[in-house]
Length: 155
Image 1 (cartoon, helix red, strand yellow):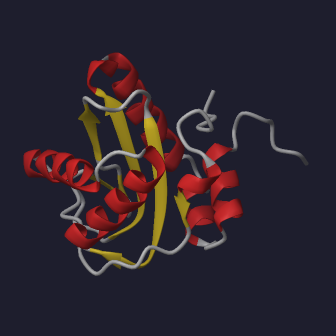
Image 2 (spheres, rainbow, N blue to C red):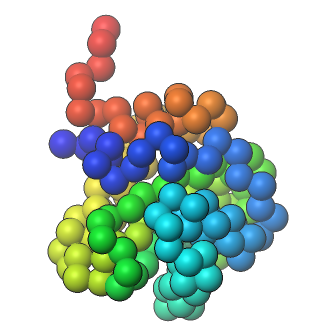
């Protein structure tokens, strides 16, 4: 039940995100999310920054899950980015972040938004998943790792 393919599409994977700070990373993922959703980049960026002001979405282990709700969005949207040189994200464990999963949800998403966040966090904490993501900058390989789990691993 860990298939994330309903949250993220292959084009929503950034294999090597250039960012030297949390703000730059959020700006870059907002730009890509705007391109893929058709929503204004500024609206996405501001929503994410507002959420970060409540507390860092750096959940530990080099992982951040910035998220927010947008009235103009019609479905839950996910985007994954790998940052080659880890950055300070004010994470809960003070570790630098190199894996970022953006989650945007419609304002009325309610429980679906929280369920999606929990699924992402669980998947990224699966043994070996973060290591596989860190080992590749290939978008197709990253997408495969993010969406694996629905099909049993072939021996």
